[in-house]
Length: 418
Image (cartoon, rainbow, N blue to C red; front, side, top):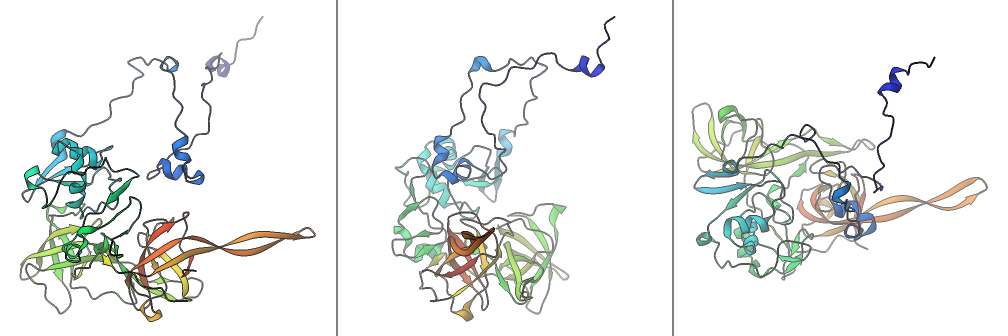
């Protein structure tokens, strides 16, 4: 008599499904990845590796029970926000400045004007806008002065003109800013100056914390996320009283940074989060309104004096023979690369000035031979990029990586350009 099949065998499919026709390596993409990065090892190989098409006839038909539930969608009215007499659009997945210009201005060629009036977002690269960003809209009759449709196509790998961000840029005669590749940051004007539109948000390292003038202790409606336009309640600190209608920079600090190898203290990081304007002063507290937000603003963020920082940075010659280490990235990211804001362990006392450029390098071990069964290695310095000095302190500087040959970590070296 034939033995009954085991339960495992009964549950196991008797025939394997047909193998897919297209077999190729699969990469699971993480947030922030795009084809240019994936294909960076092969230069422009990203353009040569399209996903192979799958014939429609090869796709299995889904029954109603197998169909996935529809993704939740955002109601169209909630994408538009009216605030302080201005109209804002909340960026959705797949949006571009080109497309938003077409949708609301009936022409895609007004995308440079959208970029110009939204420098506080900030949009550091017009090719990259992200879901959740708030884009200020305007009517055609409200276009900035001397504005006209851009004759070129949508933002792409082609060259683009750089819009001025602040009055300081216009007063510096930057109406004739030259065109630069889209991925060049900061830009270079025809006068030879560097232009870094996000200069207002870069922080710094100092030996001691900047004496705080106040601290946010509450936000109206107990909101979790504090953003532009929110009302906050401030506890005054220090001897200098806060003044009505005056703006103050918001910041937060971290524990002092110390080099674990040498025990040397680099200082305390000051991360700038936004700007608050004082509206009224009460006997026990101060009421303010968030004027700008550089990052997420939180209760316990503190106030320091506000000052206008020009984004125009004249070039300067580097200090000959100077070298040091990159301490860390401002956002404390594990991987650093192009556009990363970083701190270096040399400063004004070493002759460093804004506008100087230094090379970034790392030391790699290279096999140079063999002695019997033992491999011989030598250390070779390898360039990984360049950094532009944006802000100086006596013992440290804040800079931005303007050229990156590959990703790198904190601790790489820097030196005068060879």
